[in-house]
Image 1: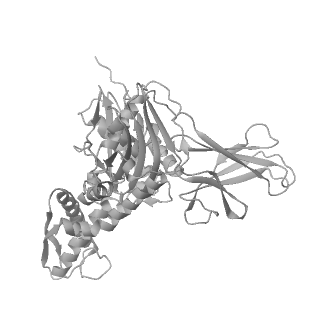
Image 2: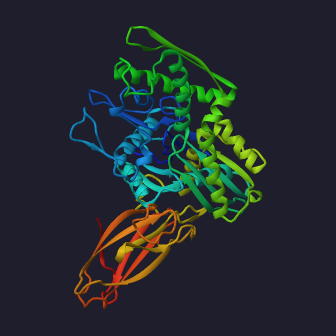
Length: 522
């Protein structure tokens, strides 16, 4: 009799996407993307029904417009923020982005166990979760917490472009400088990496630069098609189905149901336009006007019309690509290959822009929908941890792979007068085997201070004051145990330490105390 362990011995790789997520595992020398509900990706959408049932995935996405008050999408954009929601049918429970993300992770994990296509020998417990290259410390901490709520031990937060590079390079000899163009459903990232997988027993991935646009992706393309279709429909029917405030004599419910139909049709049309020059949007019984007349929608959208609508969005990603090249001190001629990540890279205009910019087409021998999950699964297999081992830390170093990262943001603390005192600069290299640290000393500002609050800030660009628009507070720390002395006599040393996952630790000591001060994150 075979005894199936409670927990799977495999470590899964998870692509936690803004619009769609995926889960994969490396078994018997190959990577398997595990289908959830019969599909290789799961819509990252949660909805709560009137009876309190929680839906995640396609069933939830189908309710996105018809029941927006109880449906949540693109929660990844809110990670680490103050977003909160209480659903009517679940009174007393306040959902945060971490809670919603935990439900999505649970759906992936439970679905992976139940699918039957891949035998995981139990419920996945260990995971490598992929995150955008420009996630800050607060967003990463929220992601780790979501993993805990989903009963996962998150061994590593792997940046999406690194995962894509691993899937691209780990099984072949590569010595190249690659650019990863990651355009998903809701976010855009570009990263430049030096890849060397030619050495025996050790592959090296060095991040040279990374930039991003937090709100850019396929959802925006769908919206553009919806606007085109709605405008054409309005010319015929005199009804703007995207306007929920104007009085057309039509119920709000009917307008939302029409919008949901149009959204689904727009997404289908977007994919048709990746293969064809035109797409047909035909929706019978789209909406009934105040006189009871039923209006149908039957229009054609050309690729050129679609391209014109999204051109400015694509150009904004081009600008980010150029910024990454400038920050890496590289030119277009230095890039060996462009690797596409994310389903929205299938849009022809994105590929045309890259081809025109680099003088060659992007590399096409990868599936942009699943390359991140597959890379995460390969990385996870390299951790080589069994389910009965006490991990104890997320700082696991794979024996055959080295990742040299760079600091994502300028990091510092607030000092007197609201000044931003930078300790670690953006772009500084983080070696693959050791964290980096930086310290600054400050004096007490009044007599007999025994306690001190430290506010930690980050910024995309160097700033003088913390109230600058680009500067954000990512945490507050409370120090106690400072020896009481006259103002200015006691020196406080604050140390920032960043590991290769770009996770921040804050330490502090004083000039006359033994050891570190007690520090608590507020």
